[in-house]
Image (tube, rainbow, N blue to C red):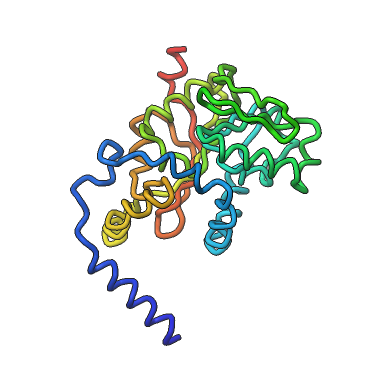
Length: 260
């Protein structure tokens, strides 16, 4: 008990002593992009965050979110494929995983090929697509297609991706664009600013730059603000970890549906 108290006191002291954050440092326009970090992180990414996700119960949140995934599913910012074990394959018709980092997506593909969960996808083997001009070759030299998805999807999934987009609002609008009219849903599991704890937002702001340089992720963003600015309608929102973890089920707004 004493050790926990001493550790907590030390962490609070570190927060207090850290330099004051720059004004509006939580806004993407004031944040440098660090997407190149993922290339270096990719080989060890899973081992580096496994323990943290276990302690925070993130696996349960992924499972909770992906219960809503049905039909043709597009996952953006799929990273190393940490959601693959949580999809209910009996509810999905197709699954397409995309990421801008070839190295991260290669990890997802390799992990899937050796995973115990692979047999669940015998009806709907996932596609792996890099969303830029690069190609990825798997270990059998089979090309994983590199093309912009243009089909309509029943479900679009983004888990912990808005923290690294240079323009999160534009990304959300694009997710809405590829959703099927009226029935499409956008599922988000994100981390960002808390709505009630100013001291925690200050702490996130103070260490956001260091965290972004290490992980390519800005953890102090206004997630609900992005969703609102993108014009999405929120059907369900739940928050965890003092409000810093967001679970959202959204759909394109009526205006977005009518302008297609």
